[in-house]
Amino acid sequence: MGDAKFGRSSRGRRTAAIRSHSSRTKLRGSSAGQGKTYSRRSQWFMKNAASARRLVRQRAGERCEYCDLAQSSFPLVSFHVEHVVAKQHGGSDDLGNLCLSCHWCNLFKGPNLSSLVEGKLTRLFNPRTDSWSDHFVAIDGRIQGITEIGIATVSLLNMNDPDRVELRRLTTNS
Ligand SMILES: [Zn+2]
Image 1 (cartoon, rainbow, N blue to C red):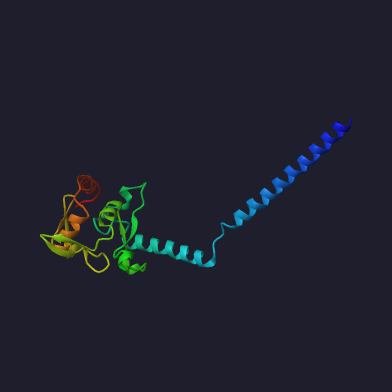
Image 2 (cartoon, protein in one colour):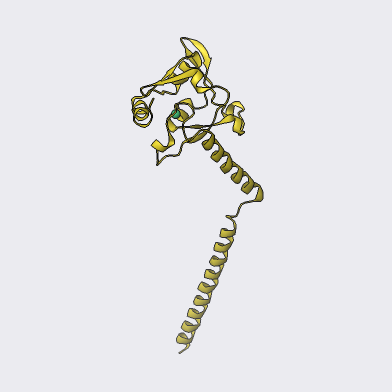
C-alpha cells in the first residue's frame, strides 16, 4: 500500500517534470524564431544588395559582359554579379565596379586584372569603362580579340572553349 502510494506520487512528479521541460522547449523555440529577424541595418544592406544585383542584370541585358553568352541559355544557373576590380585589390561594391558574368568567365577571371600577351603585361577588358566592340568581334560563335586588351581577355577567360563556342553558335546570330 505504501509502495503503491509512492509509485503514484513518483509518476506524478515525473509527469510534472516532463510538462515543465516541454514548456521550456516551446519557449526556447519561439525565442529562436525571433532570433531570425534581422537588424534594420542588415535589412537595408540586403535590400540594397538585391536592388544592385537587379540593376546590374538589367544593364547587361541578361548577357555575360565579357563573353556575350545569354543568361537564357542557362535556366538553372544564375550568372554572377562580379567585381571588375576584385575587393581584395580595393574594388568597391558600387555599380561602377560591378558587371554580369557567366560562371565560366567569373571562374577564369578570378581576381585577375591583367594577363600576358606575348610576354607583355596587358590589362583585362573592363566592361564599365571599355566598349566591347572596340576590343572584340564575334565570328561564328568564336570571340576574337582585336586589341591587346581583347586578346588578353579572350585568352585568360578561355572564351573559346568548344562548349561555349557551340552555345554561342546555337543562341546568337554571330
Ligand atoms: Zn562569360
